Image 1 (cartoon, one colour):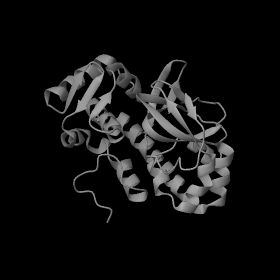
Image 2 (cartoon, rainbow, N blue to C red):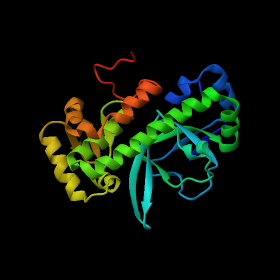
Image 3 (cartoon, rainbow, N blue to C red):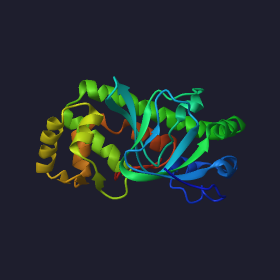
Image 4 (spheres, one colour):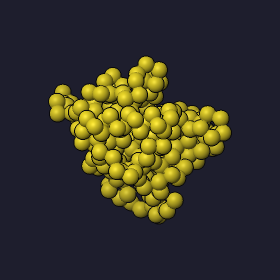
Length: 253
């Protein structure tokens, strides 16, 4: 983790959508307490059952929120990018996180703020608190849909959902991911991911090449995902701001 010293104007250049939506007075409450950090792929940002010392607002990168099962198995329960924050249990009064947060796919960067300064700002401003709680609501919806999808949807739907969620959080159409990483995140055998990916590739929805995956036909990938994808994303766009690869018919009205 590489840290840069805090300086006024850090939020001005941030790509974090939550921070961009705040009014000036709320931004001024947070700005003096931020520092920018750069993060490497595979780095664990938050450890389960450890004290929450910081809250993070990603500028770039993809962060997998994981549930630990046993000593070695980690199942992804949510994904966060530059639309959100990590460490939200602090906002709900929790001193510790139950889950881990890991940098996935690409290196990234974030603004971080100490929990005490973060909570002081939230107590001072009701509008700040409401924006952040709106994001927590979308995370709850995302987790609920993940549970329902794992129980009720086919592997091709779950894989399509997983790919679309990554696609929403990167610039362009390329993802850096290996089949074993997807298998670990979804909780299935690597061979099952490889077989299903071959079908998607044969239908020209994606192209795979040694850890690099290109989304070729997003609209068709959304059709494959069906009900597994889109609910939390629509809520975010309605409650907070435009986000991700917007559908052609998207409108705030």
